[in-house]
Length: 464
Image (cartoon, rainbow, N blue to C red; front, side, top):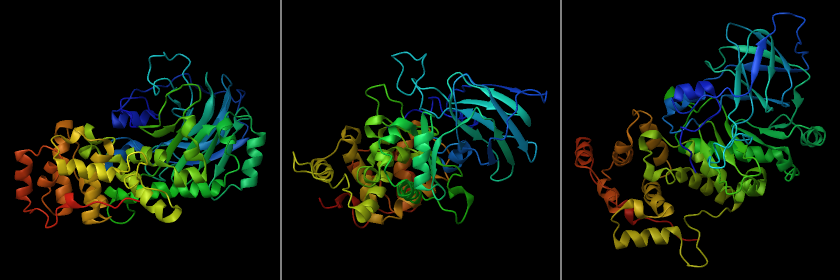
């Protein structure tokens, strides 16, 4: 599920740059301590921090429909409610980081109304600008402590010292933390949250929820999660080679455990994070869940790779699964996971490929009337026709386009898939019930494209 970018998200700078959501400083307060006799950060917890390109700037460059990564940088610390925290900042230049209290989507808002949607029923992270020297910070709700330092990658650095009021939180860092040490942290920490941190991800969950799965191999788990992100980045055409337009974002994805206590909540993606309610957290927090039953995380992270110029409302919950299926194909080879398009329903004896091809043979009047997996079939047929390199080529082409209105995006799907394929796919899309405008046919004619020799609509995968 994707949530409109008009819902609250984590960072004030991301909100402003994306023009996507409302800013909320919330209950956090800070004061610069001019007098050295004010409570000071004792240096109990010292965290170096380096500036990083704003997540919203990366989203604009990559043309993603949502701000996909986070500006939040973890500290491994938790601030209890209504406790004053001394924070000392030593900056190497004029720029200083800000402090953010609370992971997005992780805390219920006590003032929310029952009629609010489940995103609106959680607190927005509270961000406070810091000043060089001594600062005092408190927050009425308490929460995980983060630093945020948008700027050119590596252009500015600072050292932030947190006083004893900041409580160490159980935190596993891939490649750094020993499993035995993490288990000891889980036993001694009283902070209500725990975090798993890797190259491409921050996973923030309630400590009680993580304790249910504490005996997992967390190094292996985070390696698999990083691979999920890498597969989706490859499918999106991200690369560190060549021009800057296709470089992946500098920051990680933020995957958050939605708080317990509200029924009927589904996993969702919005600006800056994805969220997972308690009933499906095993798919994120266990090796077996992530390798064999991880559709939820694959799908929500896929929303963070969809591109605005080819994201009309009809396909928001469809093209996201281009990325989900890419992960499933690799994990089928590595772990034996069953891909959803090829899986046979034991009650009907058919797969999604069967029902898609039956609809195509019967004649499709309106693409929107198909089920979501049948709607996915034409996109997967293009992969079968043009190979695994088709999706990256398509995404790279779309990154060169300007944002489009909702009305123009479907026609751009037809135009841009044709341009990426090197074939005129107008008749292909029309066969799938998509209306092709005369202007689109004319534009394809100007490209000098011809219909493909082999009709992609005849292709399918076999059932398992």
